[in-house]
Amino acid sequence: YLRDQNYDGAAALLNTALSLPDAEISADTPAVEAELLTNLGWARLNQGWPLEAEENLRDSLALQDEWLTQGTDEQQQLRGTTYCLLAQATEVQTSVEAALPLWQDCLQTAEPTNPATDAWTGEARRRLER
Image (cartoon, rainbow, N blue to C red; front, side, top):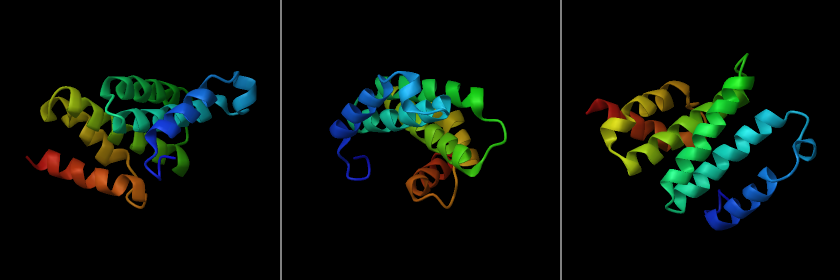
């Protein structure tokens, strides 16, 4: 749904998944829940709900802090995506200046080979060059 820019459909599906008991999601529940929350934050941001997006993204980062140990490629990619989206949500709600630390985190953690974050890292560079 997210790739098709069907943010309403994505949000509905992600909320359903997040409401399932932990045992029904996965044995690796914190990682799955963090990914679901990041994707829900992405949907909410594109629905024009930056406050809800920020809440979901911060919750995702908190979960990632619990299970991100070795920093596998997949985990690092999720962290980069989360920071890039959080920078956008913060900027929409407050200002570019308030989002600068998050843009820095986005640039430092996003995978340059990930097509989803490529445009966001370019945006981070532009914001940080000011």
